[in-house]
Image (cartoon, rainbow, N blue to C red; front, side, top):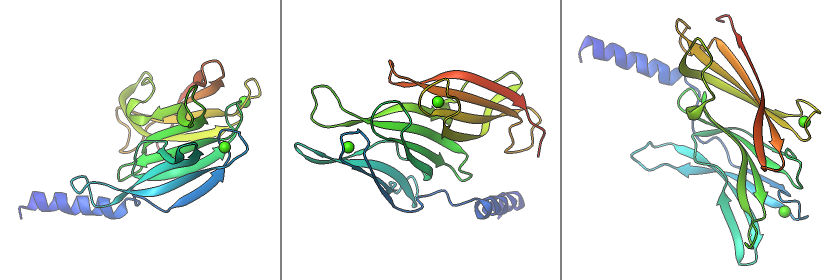
Length: 218
Ligand SMILES: [Ca+2]
Ligand SMILES: [Ca+2]
């Protein structure tokens, strides 16, 4: 094996050994009243076996099961991702029932992925409830790169909490770390926190505040 190729292989193996596991972790089953009708639905986190050409590890899916006049349904409420970082069942918007907050990650370093807040909504004229994402953040479609950034995002962090009483319900904060030229590897020195609040008329979260500042390399 040529020396350069071997060196690259060793570097790759070291990277794989150092990386945290980025695959399905464990099955979770939770029950909560999502639509506020007094009956509890079941939220399930389960393994999803990826086709062989993608990889030989299990990825992660999240489904909600509910009783419907025509029988039981179990609908996926988010796209498939490598692993689940966090699931919280909270009364987040101001409507009846609970929402499901999901943070799903992809890749060897598990820094990219999406955050999603899903309501379980009645649909006019339909006997069965449907998942409705009232908030969605996807790091592949991150917010606008701040001045000084090179367009890459190194990581993002999320929170769902009552940031302010100015708006009813819980707010979502997304902390994105944008990479500037000269940053160390895997580090984003531009910290941009964007806040979203629930807008009842539009039945979804809208941005209301952004705070950007520069961080010193760790
Ligand atoms: Ca219910
Ligand atoms: Ca609030």
